Image 1 (tube, rainbow, N blue to C red):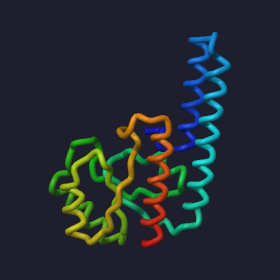
Image 2 (tube, rainbow, N blue to C red):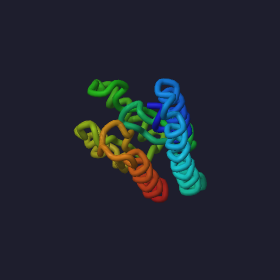
Image 3 (cartoon, rainbow, N blue to C red):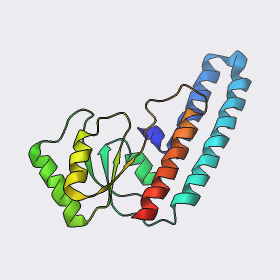
Image 4 (cartoon, one colour):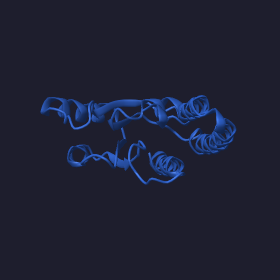
Length: 167
């Protein structure tokens, strides 16, 4: 999930553009121009996200699965625990009890789920702890449009602003 870091997404776009230019030298200039235009959009997104998020209080958070490590590093978030280590592998009763205890012990206020996964376990956690729940999208599904990633990440920024401003 390296692409969830905008910085690493820029590196991926540059590498894709470079490889396309090597494979199709006849259109290398077009690939280069398109790559740099998209990297510029990503850089603007990154700046906007940092402007919105850097000054906010960032308590430890819980994420539903391990999609946001790179994102957390880029935006200085601390992930205290992950609900599902592997997609679709619900925590055991013991693991769920330990997670709930961690939330109580560390007074963790925020749980971030993903739109791609069922919310049953997240709802149990909310019911047991009162933790606030928000949705972050790791951009693995969604619309097939040129600006889909930018729109998803912009929505993630707005979600984080709401979540962190209320914590």
